[in-house]
Image (cartoon, rainbow, N blue to C red; front, side):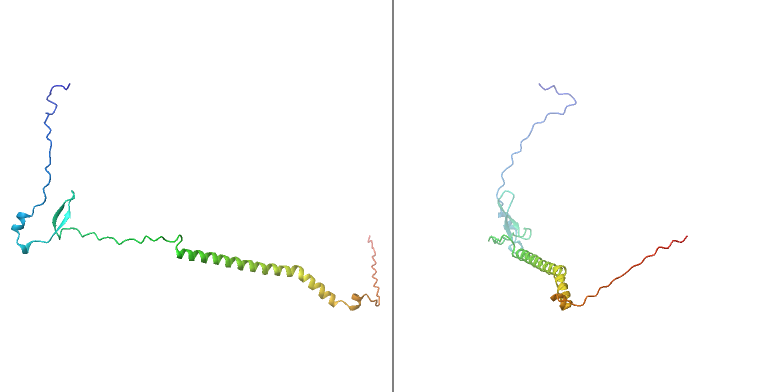
Length: 158
């Protein structure tokens, strides 16, 4: 199926399969004997990549992770109390402005009504009071006839 080896093709090599040996636990036996007690660093045990606990000098280990405080899981109100106060102030302020606007509108319309209708009645009453009593009662007084004559004359020049 495959052609014979030619000078241009690379030689075929055998494939070697690597079988890794399982890691043995860390043994402190020989190093503990060689280090004097006073010169040894404090050791902490930390998990490695495979989940096993291995010793590490304390000054090289990362800082321990502090446990977080438990959260408060009580239910919160639907609206924030501060937002409720702002909303109430906005609604109250709007109602106040609407009430003031309505009141001012009523006052302006009343003033317009006085100038239109009531002042006419006031003028009628004042004229009635100033009229002579005999005109009101219907009594007869002296009659004066005024006659005005206008005479026009046409002049033709010419």
